Image (cartoon, rainbow, N blue to C red; front, side, top):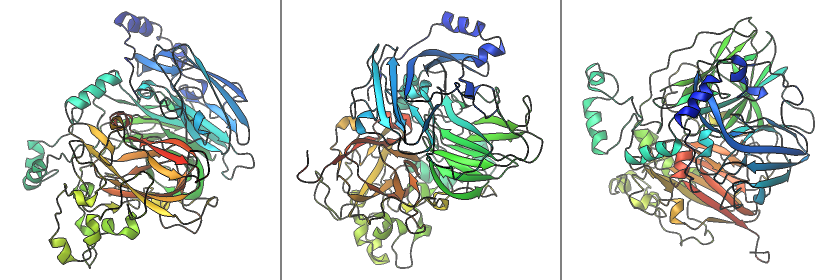
Length: 610
């Protein structure tokens, strides 16, 4: 989990690199075959990595973005790295050689592997030392769209990521004529350790979209009274993203908006687009003006088709969509940053060199009281709230957790009616709402009235005027593998201090060495994640798929490995514990780096090995 010193290219090296990039062929040489500027969508044999033995080398490289050259950490010399294409049922050996001067690693995101192959230094293996080679070997137990990336320091921010496509052992239930892999990411020419240092020094340092006096006079955004109240709480409603388009360029397959990566199609084809969000800190809102998007898979697993106009994709999530362009014209693929400070842009077209209109950035969103977990509209007539109803949030400490403190009464346990509520401390520092949280400078607030927001669109998408995917639209195509009811429930609070850039679970940073969350092999547990911060967190559990606990046909709850927990929101999932020590963390890399990381420790039942 520690950072190395990184690599700082000198000016002469950058100039030499820029001089070499004057020709289009040289530009394309920095990209793997699948990600070059124009893609046919048909990747010839030999242009992706497959088979039983695959070799990867991690090293330094240049990266050209819209004509500007920067430093990257590359896989086999390219950013993104090469596609690995596997077949369900095979066994694969991946030899990873580290040519850096610091440790590295690879985590196979969403791929179910033995714990010792999971690739998290200090948790499941020691990491790959400079000059050494580590061999990962595992059976391929699934199919779908996944990806792989570093779990060492901040290397992922520098380009250490790439796609994995796993073809099913039998017929694919998704029919398509052509496919494109679309990797979304963010890149800064400022070194990631410097970005992290700036975040620690000043909250909102990259937010150039704050409210102004001109906006107040024009009647935009908040009123003076609202601004005054928010200022008293030391809250900024425009603080949607930690790092913004002020210093980020948003990439599609390693290409900036000006480079215009293009995927080809023939009118009338069914085109499968495999979207992967490999961004460090950016949640994207994705749409293709003029085309419907039929969502057919989420996090690699098939879902019943859902037709939408736009979807939000959190860090580390994947979505497969089908589009059917019938016209002989180009379409713009828009991946707009959630704070609307910039966008990634690419094109679907019948021929190379075509482009379509690029829509302007939409008005940036503002956080609301709901994002503080203070949504009074969720009040029931008896005075209780959805966020305080144990049938919806999970009774956090009702069942003993091995190694945990004894159960204590939550503040919400006495919220039976309005009269009881009137006697309660409804401030954002009422520790009784979450007695398991370690209060301190890393806990800026506790959401007093959190609610399940999985049926809502993401921030800023509430009134876009078209259909936006929400989690409650997702229904698993194949039956869930384990339909047992959970035997116990566990509440985990997502905590932080945005001004000090401190993040954790239950008020503890990973550097505080908290006790892992403990589970028994094969037990079914319902985990309730409550977001006590005003920022969305894409939370990832290694080594498992979990079922989102929501209304769905029996046995068909959607299965995911990563889920966005909205500000002031609650997400519940059920999972079956697999033995091992598994990382559990926010997939915003700087949040994880600042402490929002924990371990799910799963051990055999009594009588087994410890």
